[in-house]
Image 1 (cartoon, rainbow over the protein chains, first blue to last red):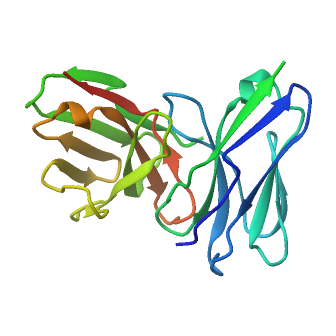
Image 2: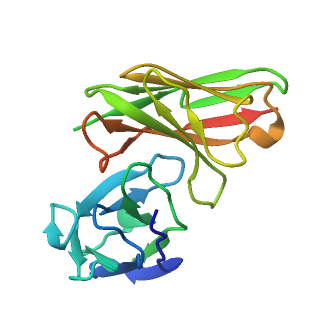
Length: 107
Length: 116
């Protein structure tokens, strides 16, 4: 399973765009990249998943370069309620969680 | 959307007793369910993979006789913490993968276990 590396923490202000980058150098051909959000004392919540190029949904965008060795989660115009831990996972079968990125959104 | 429900949301038990946690996929069939444990300010640690109708596969370092997993149907998996001790106090989370998929996973809301 590919290991992922992402920043431990990030700070932002309300209304800003936040980009969290994850590296996964050993990603395999069949692996998908998935991002989850977790609030304290809750289970992780699916944000977005992609294989290559760009994927966008109502809450985020995911950018994946051609070599797929990294990915960037983009959260447009964050609010205080986006303060959470964000996990990047390379998925093929079981999900192994890395350390995640704690995003703190300030007023 | 796909919903995974855990029960109970929290439980307090006495040291030496056993506790059962249920994980149900409410609107889909799950051939595979995963059990995680999460300590405060740490990431989720995979404990075991549960496949319907077969024995669970435990991760290295997880005691299979202490954490009993049963996946009796395509919508239900249970985790029983046997002879619980205070160090077993943690947040336990399950996830379920829909039948036919190995890239999607939906998580339960978690169960807070406190052993006193």
